[in-house]
Length: 316
Image (cartoon, rainbow, N blue to C red; front, side, top):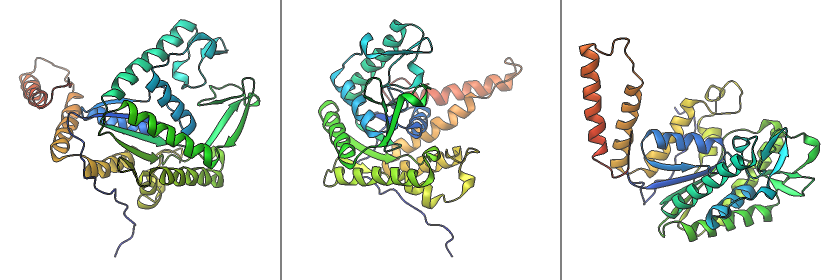
């Protein structure tokens, strides 16, 4: 008897190779997946604007990266003695205008250069809700702990969602490699602060808009990450204590599902060995002159060198 509904990711006819470059953008779940790519020693860049949740702001980020359009001082605001970009995550906030701009524009340069060489782009939408900063009548990516009274919250319309996805795809197809594949996902992180009904409405609008915009485009695909979490892993033990974010076990399960569908056999073996090496590198000895520890390190270095010989890019 079956006691759960397993959700599979359809196997891709194009596979991710060990030298492929993967760009990811979107919610915190995108960052978790990107971190696993990094641990597996694949080439990846994640969220040059920091964690972003809604399609409008992600589209704006991709456009600025495509155009390599730097931010100027007049685009920032000041709050609580910090210079802030409302298009960015709070991690870009600093006490000095030049520091904020340097962090922002440095990431634009990095993101623009990486996108031009990207084989894969993974976009993870988190919500259909967006906030408008009333003093500037500006739709924002992050509220930066500014008091709620300065914002108006609303759902993006279906037209706004599809327009954002359309513009995102156009800019990516223009800047990335010709054979780029764009993978869309909806974050399984539950936005319970919006309300349970509102969260479901928000996610449903995202899923609908993605399917409407990508139908018939053979270079765009939808990954059922949200469905895996909701139906396959339908149990609160797969959520952290906040009952919002997936556990490490759940993320690893989803990553394995993704890998089975999208990694080449060579890439699977490459990542598997690198995970083992990364785990071994965490081992420390109280006596680094212990012959057994020295032998352990020598064998580990041999494994690392063997992995380095498999790729052109720098690893470990």
